[in-house]
Image (cartoon, rainbow, N blue to C red; front, side, top):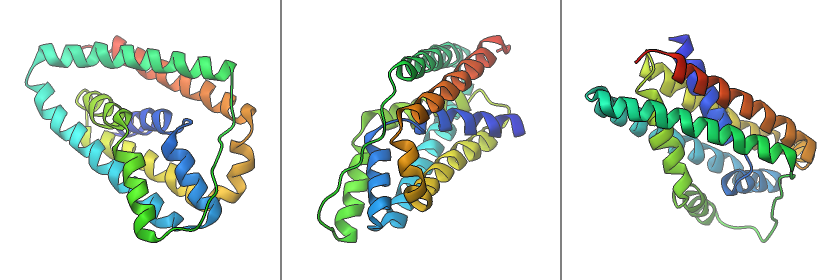
Length: 200
Protein backbone atom coordinates (compact mmCIF):
# COMPACT_ATOMS: atom_id res chain seq x y z
CA UNK A 1 0.00 0.00 0.00
CA UNK A 2 2.73 2.47 0.97
CA UNK A 3 4.71 1.70 -2.18
CA UNK A 4 1.64 2.53 -4.28
CA UNK A 5 1.11 5.73 -2.28
CA UNK A 6 4.72 6.88 -2.65
CA UNK A 7 4.73 5.99 -6.35
CA UNK A 8 1.66 8.16 -6.89
CA UNK A 9 3.20 10.94 -4.82
CA UNK A 10 6.53 10.85 -6.66
CA UNK A 11 5.12 10.61 -10.17
CA UNK A 12 2.65 13.43 -9.65
CA UNK A 13 5.21 15.60 -7.88
CA UNK A 14 7.55 15.15 -10.82
CA UNK A 15 4.85 16.11 -13.28
CA UNK A 16 3.32 19.02 -11.39
CA UNK A 17 6.46 20.74 -10.09
CA UNK A 18 7.61 22.21 -13.37
CA UNK A 19 7.53 25.55 -15.10
CA UNK A 20 4.10 26.01 -16.63
CA UNK A 21 1.12 28.29 -17.09
CA UNK A 22 -0.85 26.86 -14.15
CA UNK A 23 1.99 27.17 -11.66
CA UNK A 24 2.80 30.70 -12.84
CA UNK A 25 -0.88 31.65 -12.51
CA UNK A 26 -1.26 30.24 -8.99
CA UNK A 27 1.99 31.83 -7.86
CA UNK A 28 1.00 35.20 -9.30
CA UNK A 29 -2.38 35.10 -7.53
CA UNK A 30 -0.67 34.11 -4.29
CA UNK A 31 1.91 36.88 -4.49
CA UNK A 32 -0.87 39.42 -5.08
CA UNK A 33 -3.07 37.81 -2.38
CA UNK A 34 -5.90 37.92 -4.91
CA UNK A 35 -8.26 34.99 -4.17
CA UNK A 36 -5.19 32.77 -3.88
CA UNK A 37 -6.74 30.17 -1.56
CA UNK A 38 -9.84 29.54 -3.74
CA UNK A 39 -7.52 29.31 -6.75
CA UNK A 40 -5.31 26.71 -5.03
CA UNK A 41 -8.34 24.73 -3.81
CA UNK A 42 -9.88 24.71 -7.30
CA UNK A 43 -6.63 23.41 -8.78
CA UNK A 44 -6.49 20.68 -6.11
CA UNK A 45 -10.10 19.61 -6.76
CA UNK A 46 -9.60 19.56 -10.55
CA UNK A 47 -6.45 17.46 -10.21
CA UNK A 48 -8.09 15.04 -7.76
CA UNK A 49 -11.08 14.52 -10.08
CA UNK A 50 -8.92 14.00 -13.17
CA UNK A 51 -6.55 11.67 -11.31
CA UNK A 52 -9.48 9.62 -9.96
CA UNK A 53 -11.05 9.39 -13.41
CA UNK A 54 -7.76 8.21 -14.84
CA UNK A 55 -6.80 5.76 -12.12
CA UNK A 56 -10.18 4.14 -11.54
CA UNK A 57 -11.52 4.40 -15.09
CA UNK A 58 -8.36 3.23 -16.85
CA UNK A 59 -7.47 0.78 -14.10
CA UNK A 60 -10.68 -1.17 -14.69
CA UNK A 61 -10.22 -1.11 -18.46
CA UNK A 62 -6.54 -2.06 -18.45
CA UNK A 63 -6.88 -4.89 -15.96
CA UNK A 64 -9.31 -6.57 -18.36
CA UNK A 65 -6.72 -6.78 -21.13
CA UNK A 66 -3.15 -8.04 -20.85
CA UNK A 67 -2.35 -6.41 -24.19
CA UNK A 68 -3.53 -2.97 -23.05
CA UNK A 69 -1.78 -3.43 -19.71
CA UNK A 70 1.46 -4.24 -21.53
CA UNK A 71 1.07 -1.21 -23.79
CA UNK A 72 0.39 0.98 -20.75
CA UNK A 73 3.39 -0.48 -18.94
CA UNK A 74 5.90 0.06 -21.73
CA UNK A 75 4.30 3.29 -22.90
CA UNK A 76 4.34 4.62 -19.35
CA UNK A 77 7.97 3.63 -18.89
CA UNK A 78 8.90 5.26 -22.21
CA UNK A 79 7.09 8.45 -21.22
CA UNK A 80 8.78 8.55 -17.82
CA UNK A 81 12.19 8.12 -19.44
CA UNK A 82 11.36 10.86 -21.97
CA UNK A 83 10.08 13.15 -19.22
CA UNK A 84 13.19 12.50 -17.14
CA UNK A 85 15.35 13.33 -20.15
CA UNK A 86 13.42 16.58 -20.63
CA UNK A 87 14.01 17.44 -16.97
CA UNK A 88 17.74 16.80 -17.45
CA UNK A 89 17.67 19.03 -20.52
CA UNK A 90 15.94 21.82 -18.56
CA UNK A 91 18.53 21.40 -15.81
CA UNK A 92 21.24 22.25 -18.35
CA UNK A 93 19.43 25.49 -19.23
CA UNK A 94 17.46 26.48 -16.14
CA UNK A 95 15.12 29.47 -16.09
CA UNK A 96 13.34 31.18 -13.22
CA UNK A 97 9.58 31.20 -12.80
CA UNK A 98 8.12 34.51 -13.97
CA UNK A 99 4.84 35.97 -12.72
CA UNK A 100 2.55 38.62 -14.15
CA UNK A 101 0.92 41.53 -12.40
CA UNK A 102 -2.21 43.48 -13.30
CA UNK A 103 -5.44 45.05 -12.10
CA UNK A 104 -7.45 43.31 -9.38
CA UNK A 105 -10.21 40.96 -10.58
CA UNK A 106 -13.36 39.50 -9.07
CA UNK A 107 -13.42 36.03 -7.53
CA UNK A 108 -15.60 34.78 -10.40
CA UNK A 109 -13.19 36.09 -13.04
CA UNK A 110 -10.20 34.60 -11.24
CA UNK A 111 -11.85 31.18 -10.83
CA UNK A 112 -12.89 31.14 -14.50
CA UNK A 113 -9.33 31.98 -15.47
CA UNK A 114 -8.11 29.17 -13.18
CA UNK A 115 -10.43 26.68 -14.89
CA UNK A 116 -9.22 27.85 -18.29
CA UNK A 117 -5.55 27.54 -17.35
CA UNK A 118 -6.20 24.11 -15.83
CA UNK A 119 -8.70 22.44 -18.16
CA UNK A 120 -7.89 23.96 -21.56
CA UNK A 121 -4.34 22.66 -21.39
CA UNK A 122 -4.16 19.30 -23.23
CA UNK A 123 -1.14 18.27 -21.19
CA UNK A 124 -3.27 18.10 -18.05
CA UNK A 125 -5.25 15.22 -19.59
CA UNK A 126 -2.14 13.46 -20.82
CA UNK A 127 -0.55 13.79 -17.38
CA UNK A 128 -3.45 13.14 -14.99
CA UNK A 129 -5.88 10.96 -16.93
CA UNK A 130 -3.66 8.97 -19.28
CA UNK A 131 -0.21 8.76 -17.69
CA UNK A 132 -1.10 8.81 -14.00
CA UNK A 133 -4.22 6.74 -14.68
CA UNK A 134 -2.47 4.03 -16.69
CA UNK A 135 0.35 3.77 -14.17
CA UNK A 136 -2.24 3.52 -11.39
CA UNK A 137 -3.71 0.45 -13.05
CA UNK A 138 -0.41 -1.35 -12.50
CA UNK A 139 -0.13 -0.60 -8.78
CA UNK A 140 -0.90 -3.20 -6.11
CA UNK A 141 -3.30 -0.72 -4.45
CA UNK A 142 -4.69 1.76 -7.03
CA UNK A 143 -6.63 3.69 -4.38
CA UNK A 144 -3.44 4.32 -2.38
CA UNK A 145 -1.69 5.39 -5.59
CA UNK A 146 -4.52 7.84 -6.37
CA UNK A 147 -4.34 9.19 -2.82
CA UNK A 148 -0.59 9.71 -3.18
CA UNK A 149 -1.05 11.47 -6.52
CA UNK A 150 -3.76 13.75 -5.10
CA UNK A 151 -1.57 14.43 -2.04
CA UNK A 152 1.28 15.67 -4.25
CA UNK A 153 -1.08 18.06 -6.01
CA UNK A 154 -2.54 19.28 -2.72
CA UNK A 155 0.87 19.83 -1.11
CA UNK A 156 2.25 21.69 -4.11
CA UNK A 157 -0.66 24.09 -4.57
CA UNK A 158 -1.00 24.78 -0.84
CA UNK A 159 2.74 25.39 -0.74
CA UNK A 160 2.39 27.93 -3.55
CA UNK A 161 -0.65 29.56 -1.94
CA UNK A 162 0.72 29.88 1.58
CA UNK A 163 4.40 30.18 0.86
CA UNK A 164 4.43 32.35 -2.25
CA UNK A 165 6.13 35.33 -0.61
CA UNK A 166 8.89 33.08 0.73
CA UNK A 167 9.09 30.83 -2.35
CA UNK A 168 9.05 33.51 -5.04
CA UNK A 169 12.70 34.60 -4.67
CA UNK A 170 13.78 30.95 -4.73
CA UNK A 171 11.56 30.01 -7.68
CA UNK A 172 12.89 32.99 -9.60
CA UNK A 173 16.41 31.55 -9.40
CA UNK A 174 17.57 29.28 -12.22
CA UNK A 175 19.67 27.25 -9.76
CA UNK A 176 16.52 26.27 -7.83
CA UNK A 177 14.94 24.89 -11.00
CA UNK A 178 18.17 23.09 -11.91
CA UNK A 179 18.03 21.23 -8.58
CA UNK A 180 14.28 20.56 -8.91
CA UNK A 181 14.71 19.22 -12.46
CA UNK A 182 17.58 16.95 -11.43
CA UNK A 183 15.45 15.50 -8.61
CA UNK A 184 12.49 15.11 -10.99
CA UNK A 185 14.69 13.30 -13.53
CA UNK A 186 15.98 10.91 -10.85
CA UNK A 187 12.41 10.12 -9.69
CA UNK A 188 11.15 9.55 -13.24
CA UNK A 189 14.05 7.24 -14.14
CA UNK A 190 13.68 5.27 -10.90
CA UNK A 191 9.95 4.69 -11.39
CA UNK A 192 10.46 3.82 -15.08
CA UNK A 193 13.00 1.18 -14.03
CA UNK A 194 10.56 -0.16 -11.45
CA UNK A 195 7.93 -0.54 -14.19
CA UNK A 196 10.33 -2.25 -16.58
CA UNK A 197 11.80 -4.61 -13.95
CA UNK A 198 8.50 -5.67 -12.36
CA UNK A 199 6.73 -8.79 -13.73
CA UNK A 200 3.44 -8.31 -15.56
